[in-house]
Image 1 (cartoon, rainbow, N blue to C red):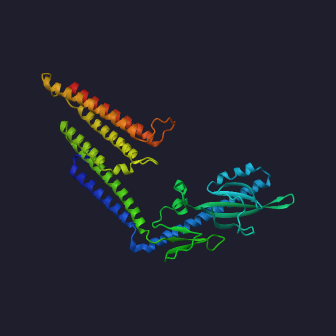
Image 2 (tube, rainbow, N blue to C red):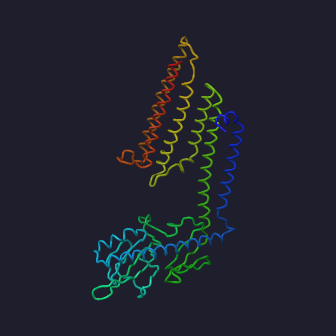
Length: 421
């Protein structure tokens, strides 16, 4: 169906649109309730989250072990050719997913990077088999891997031990270091439906808990992953926040479609009637998006910015879009209207000229004032000289330009109409 057929059959088109929105709403609600935490299915949620956490631990061990073997082969090949320490250190650069590396010659460190060990760790078997364990270094819990290999020297074989590490957990007691905290589960698998915690060097919780034993290739038990009780309220709160986000997006999308539909519906009318109805619909839409703070919550949030910056940015984008749509509507109708007045109506001409001048002053003053408030109150640094500006800066410049252009375009269309009539 073409656009004209939708316009000529508005009631049928309206019924189709409402039906499609209703179906989409039911599908969205069904999906939301399918993932809603429920106390009836607590055990299944526990077990699923624990299984995912255990698998994440195993995947981390496999990735560390495979990467350590590859790195050991590369270092062994270079040591056999007698290269410098700088060349050995360069071999580490392609293994940045390994958190820390220390290469020992017997027990003397040769090169190191990241979470390294100044001394050879204790409690590591003397045999040459790959060894994986969990260790604690200060406030960091690490997964440790040892790969041993030998190089023929002048007086016989020389033993090398490659120690690699991956962070499992890092906690900081001081508030200044909270941004450096890390957890393996939140860092790699944020889709757990129930919060899971890891325990390695702490006493086992006394409460009856669902848990899984964590093991490595070298040890049957290095810790546990357990589901602490009373955390369903956190999962429910996260679900409510996600549900609000998707419902707000759907509501905004649905209202936008309805506004567009009624805007196109009045294309069937002509003259002043069409102009007033369409401009009125745009003002109602502007008022709707301004009064409801929904778009401000998810339109675009900048890391480190405050609520005032987000509000000013949303207001600027919203105002520039609606002013442009209003200016476009005015120009489409005013430029097509024919002369229906005569030159003897001097009083009407003076009234409209005075009104047009007042609108000019009001619109230009309001536009410049809004741009000034945005520049003064926003934390977005628009005057930073950058070859490639960041997305917030780029959108801000485009919105300011669109707003000022739209005001000028609307005033030009109104001025042309008054001169013509």
